[in-house]
Length: 456
Image 1 (cartoon, rainbow, N blue to C red):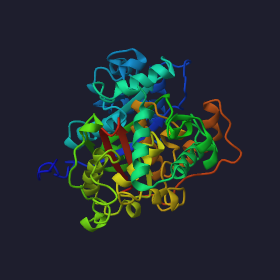
Image 2 (image 1 turned 180 degrees about the vertical axis):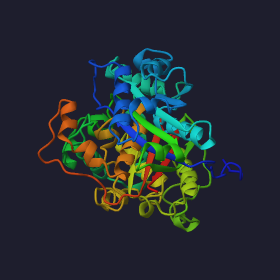
Image 3 (image 1 turned 90 degrees about the horizontal axis):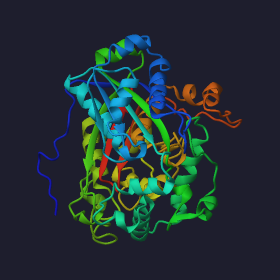
Image 4 (image 1 turned 90 degrees about the vertical axis):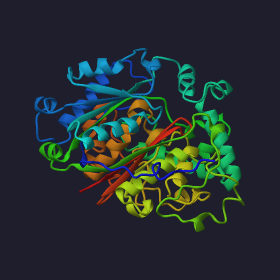
């Protein structure tokens, strides 16, 4: 039984406010052989510096940078150790210091956390966060085996060498405990593929019905191909600053009110029962008729302690009382439809056992109470793993700055990537958006970060 001490639940604080001023993306593809990794990272940085209405020219910006954080999931894919050193050189930041972060699928979120800590402590005041993944140098089968190495290789990887198999088991358990039909999970896939149709960056857009998802080929029962994230190539960049530097660079900086992390055991079988960690919108009464009756233990095999821990710390750090009411938009790490619905409960959008209500009520949709994954998410747009958590925050930044249309609706942006803007394109800009949240998730919940952005 895990029991927290008071030090374990200390709420973090920034010694100095942290701001996000600009973001840049590439488009995302299954294969991107015409551009190497350095070119993709340069392209994302150029967008951040040259297309986000910064008040300085690129050369002046470069001279303001004093620390850089790099994000890459696995050296295996690009077959290059110390890849960050190579990217750092190509971006023109030598001899400035840098670090490279690796925490599985949460690498992007963890990298933003590391950059925020540098700014909040006063160590640095202008920090680009650069993330990428090169997943087209190997076959899909080999790529799946590499990714499966982020589970416990002593016990779990040998059972299938495919991450969908791990989440399929979770899906079966979750559906059994909570009587959730497959149709509910399929709605998540339809939503996220659909929103990807309005993004020029998207790899896997599509307008599907629930029946389309259910009849699609199964990857690992019950999950179909349309319910699984895509393996991608691409890059993302986010620029963090202290308050003074942020206002020198931008007339519209967005504050990073909180970013916190949680972890859990790599081997899921090692996850011991413990008293539930309650979020600000929950009490012991919330679960008096759930645990011990419909479900015996928490977190068990169907909840993510790491996500609950990250949300607990971030909510208390940023003063969040009810996430559905306090957030205007949300980006979740929808690696699979089942992980999405699990996350709804872990971060308090609905109590445990009732996650299906969030999608079935309409709350998760554009113009709902809390629009979720308007970017298309990992299922519809991308999962270039080292870039993913950064991509999520870039999309939040543009929404809070009112720039969704600029980056998603300009026909020239679509043409840049060899695409034509759809005739039925529509704006997914959330009106008067003030606060957003992004969840970056790794493995079967081994690492999770929760980031909260707020318009000052």
